[in-house]
Image (cartoon, rainbow, N blue to C red; front, top):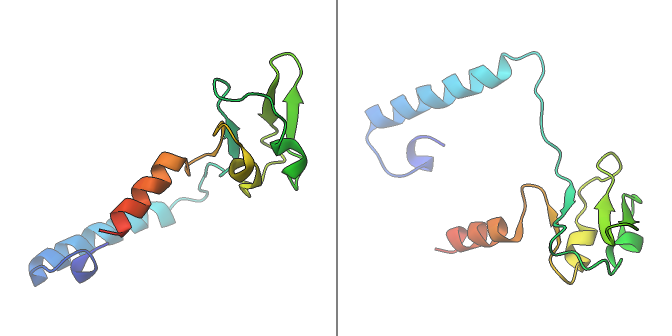
Amino acid sequence: MAGLAHSPKFIDETISQAYGAVARACTIISKKAIETESIIAEVNEDLCCGCSICIPLCPYNARELDTEKKIAKVNEILCKGCGACVAACPSGAAQQRHFRDSQLVSMIETSTR
């Protein structure tokens, strides 16, 4: 963000911010390939009770029960990050990478100020 989209400011500040934004964009665009981290579900092993509620809800069959540990596991190759398991998890053990409950609450609180 730069200029008035950021906050009211003088034109010289706006131009400086715009140059900074363009420089950052150029570093990203100049790369031949960009690696990103997928948004997939994760399981907090300390919180998972092994109830298996999430397993049949996954439309991509990316969930299974680890019989040794008695917890749900995520197959990261199959998971598409739809969030069905996260919404259904009664213990809060299932979370989406980069979209944890605490992060979402923080975003909502900030946007409603």
